[in-house]
Length: 241
Image (cartoon, rainbow, N blue to C red; front, side, top):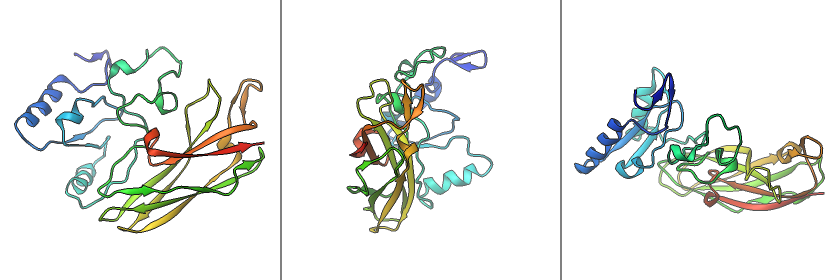
């Protein structure tokens, strides 16, 4: 079959018949809400133009129909976040037999359609400026990050505050790595402070001199927000002495 080699897919795009159907519906002037049921990331760049909304339903199980209906009709306010990045197209993927991490996952690329940690809601949230208990710490010390969150919309909802760490000047290391998160449920107009403790392991990265994961002295960037996209993140610095 086109798009398959044996039991494996050869691309991550939708089958042409499905893609063309969505385009035709949009061209007919219809509002198109696309519910995508897949077990992995699909390249949906054209669908961001041919669809008014996309609901990623994964493999939802026997009660999936009821759950999807609750979301579509507004009886449930979704608050989920993507556990992986959705790429723009198959050309953005490396060869399957190439084990290099270059341009793979949110940790080594910023070229994606929907980033790791992304997810929308029927309300909106504002992530305020965080405070941190210590900006200069020893390799065996913890530090506490306090992040204000406000529901700026008109209905109750859930936001997931995410914290990423980057080791500054680590040219071979990841761009950022998720090291903490907290789920915050807020009524409309209400605020709360998310507190996330950063332990020594939060600052562990591979050290080529020791040939192992280790906490080493230096400057680290703490990034926090509601997805791994740089535009959704604020940052502050921590020095490990």
